[in-house]
Length: 228
Image 1 (cartoon, helix red, strand yellow):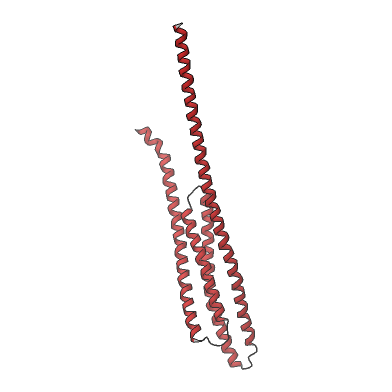
Image 2: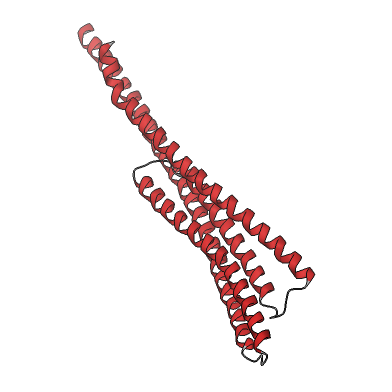
């Protein structure tokens, strides 16, 4: 009788332990699922915010492109008006003036195109590294700054274009001052944009370095434990 009683007690203890272990395992699984769900939610929100920001920048970019085209058309209208000038000498002066204005604007356009090309290359690099599970958050932040400043630069160029396309005649003193200010602002924006590009490259290098160091640590860790 005592023998059977002992077996029953042992069986009860074993079943109780199994029940506790099962509960703990279930809780651990639930916690893991909860953590994954929370992480996924945070990532989804970050992706959504990123998509909205990109969409807004693209919208501004398109608006600027339309305005830039309109400003160019105004300049073309001025060039057509020069043909109405019967005095050859005056026509030549006006033509030279317009050509000088176009060249000034073209220099800014070339600078913007060059920076845009560099930006696109870095964005492609970011996409490639992101696929390799490298943290590119910092680099993306700098690229967002680049795009914002590029749009601001383009907007200033349009202002300058509109100012230069107001008349064939020589600019008034007031407009010359405005143009000088716009030129300085454009140059500052271009410099800041270029700096942000360099920062994005540095951020990528740092991210790659961190990834490589983490990988090396994982690879050398088993060897260290074995030596100990």
